[in-house]
Length: 396
Figure 1: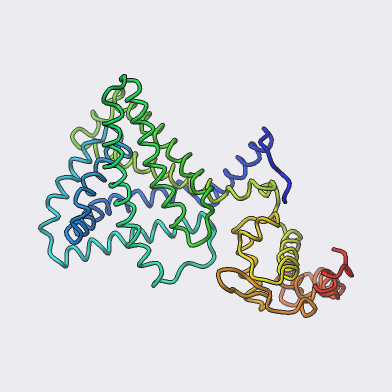
Figure 2: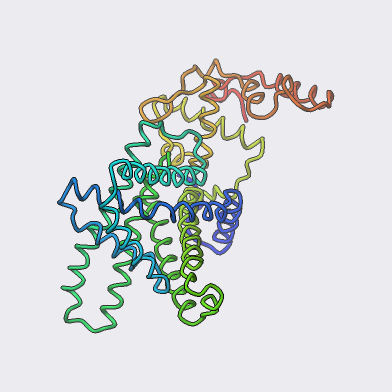
C-alpha cells in the first residue's frame, strides 16, 4: 500500500501546480482551438450519420430529436441557441443527400473523431495507438453510441422529470432540471473519457473527471448566457453575423473545459502516493526501471498497469513508457493484456540498464572525454545482476 492519503492544503496546491505544468506541456488551449473548427465542420455530418442510423434502425427514431434537445439544453448557451435552429434546418436538408454525399459526411465525422482521439492520446501520453482496424469500429461506435445513449437518456429522463415535477414547487423543478443536465453531461463525458484514449483509464477517474467537467460546463454556460444578455457590444460590431464569432468563442471555451477535464482525469492516478511530487530525472528513471523489473521478477506472472500502480509509486503513463523501452531492449514482453519478464533476472545486468536509461558513454553526443570516461567507469562498476538485487546481494 502506498503512502500519501488524505487531503491537505499543501497536497492540493502541489497537485494544482502539477496540473498546470501538464496543461502547458500539452498546450490545451491550442488543441481546443484546433478542435473548435473541426467541430464546426463536423456538427452537420454527425446529424447526417444519425439520420442514416435512424433510417436503418427505426427503433431509434426519436434519438436525433432527443440529441438536439440535449445540445440545446446542456451544451449551447441561451445566447447562441439560434445555432440549434440552423442545425435543425440542415438536418431537414440532409435527407436529400446522395449515397456519395452521405459517405463524405461519414468520412468527415471519422476524421473529427480521429482528431479527438489524437488529442486525448497526447493528454494521456499514450505511446502506442490502437491499430486502424481497431480504431475504425471504435470510431463508428462512438459516433453512433454516444448520441444514441444521450438521446435515449434524454427521452427517458424527460418523462421522469415531467412525472416528478408536475406537482412540485418551481424551485424544485428548476433544481431537478439542473441535476438532470449535470447527470446527462456526466454520462456522456464518462463514456468519452473511458473509451477514447488508447490506454487504461480507471472508471472512478473517468467518473470523477466527468463530474468535474460537467459541473464546469454548467457554470460556463450560465456565465456565458449572463454575459450575452447584459453586454451587446458584439452586435454593434458584427450585426447579423454576431452569432458566428460568439459560437466560435463558445466552442473554444467548451473544448478548453473538456480537454482540461480530460487532463485532470489523466493525472488523477498521480494523486496516489503523492506521485505528482516526483521528478523524472535520470536517477529516478533507473529507480523506476529497477522497481518495474523487480516487481515482475517477484510476482513471476503477467502484470497489468493497474497492478504496477497499486504496488509502485509510478503513474500509468510513466510505467507504460518505461515498459515499452524495456520491451524494445528485450527484457519484457506483452502478454494477455499485461506485461511479463521474458529474461532471467540473472541475465539482466545493472550496468546495461544504466547505459540504456541513464548514460551511454559509447554513444554519447558529449565531446568531453573526461566525462564520458567517468560515466563509463560508473557503468562498468555496476557489475551486478538483477538477480543479485532480488536475492538481496546488491543494495541499491
